[in-house]
Image (tube, rainbow, N blue to C red; front, side):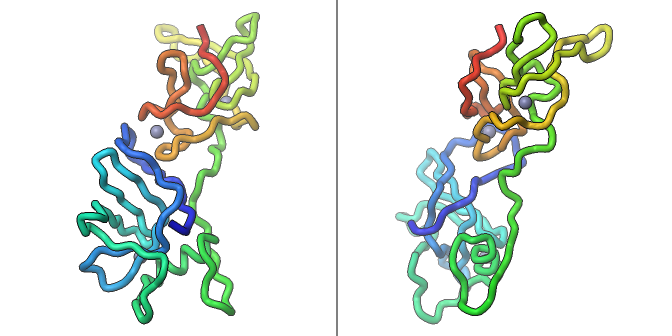
Length: 201
Ligand SMILES: [Zn+2]
Ligand SMILES: [Zn+2]
Ligand SMILES: [Zn+2]
């Protein structure tokens, strides 16, 4: 296990029965692939399978012990490597590249959103007086306003950029889907979002 992996962000919402891997092998491929690929992220599923997302877009995985895929940190001499994977892995700083050239690749990573995902929601703790609340997603204090129509009005914290206290993101869904469950801030997939704030009563 020698390279650091990026979070396995996904646009599908829902529970992921597995854990993101933070490290992985340098090279991966299935038996039928003609070249080695390089992992950008990985998930170990509760059913024992491991699936790596390659920089080029391939999903490579299965049970390694059962021969579902191959992995190595030492490239067998003469074996070809996917150019897209290698260029991106090196360009993103995951590994050092061939001498003499500087490659550059900027992956879309965990960039905080323009607007805090606590904006315009009831994910706040009232700070007294009923006019200001502390956002549960980023802990910043902002005004509370009645929002929604006359038949559907509710109090919500106003739209705001994420403050410095922004919670640690879900490795699969980042900050897109925060929710309250049993008084704790969680991602909609159920993973706790790291925060010390307590729920609004
Ligand atoms: Zn590849
Ligand atoms: Zn916020
Ligand atoms: Zn999630």
